[in-house]
Length: 317
Image (cartoon, rainbow, N blue to C red; front, side, top):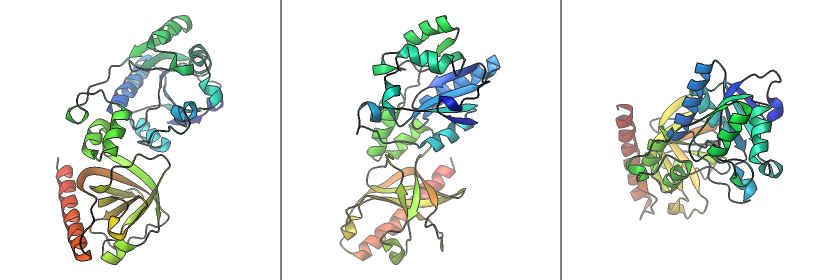
């Protein structure tokens, strides 16, 4: 998959293409429907498919300080889109100047002049341009002028976890924030992932016999509610079953929230300085303070046992 940052990166000889536009944070199952439709339509027309997205999130420019927690960094979104068969990803730097681009100018400068759109695929609530004034209806009018089709993909409605709401990044962020990683998994179509560099912490886990990877998460990451979770620690292509702790470590009067992953049944790991990923499969229990270190150790043992059971059950599905 080709990756471009800014309109100037698009090859000058780029021909017609099928385009879809959006933040696509998380590349959840609703996003996947739209992107797959764009990829399929591009193959039918014999042209490449292009996803257009933005960095930073538009809300941070339009309303500074309102940047939403991110479900996936751009490199992760690119991996997921490549797996869906996307031919090219265009990341547009979202600046104050860019935010003032009218819907008509956006169509002319991005879709027509640079990407030579033959078809544009979007969800029913797609909005674009200055003050989000452009919608699917306007896009269809522009398509008649500039000779491109507009196809709208209805999003499936989520199940029990979403209470009947359409798949959305907003809903997924809420579920993650509440610690409902199972519900988030239902919408994402995979476990929610957090990434970062392993840094040195207080090393209490090592002293207690459960050494953890203390992950310094990327800015604006959507981190699950405080508690213990079952999941995986991904290191250099290897997925290790893990018991994951999120919180301030109240047993030792901690104040800083951390994400720490204990690789179950692994010894002698030296992960400091490595970029790792943590997948959250299921909630085990909430954060707690225990009466003694012995009680804490017993709880950690139970956490590891329960995490192992949950992971094995999931792998057996």
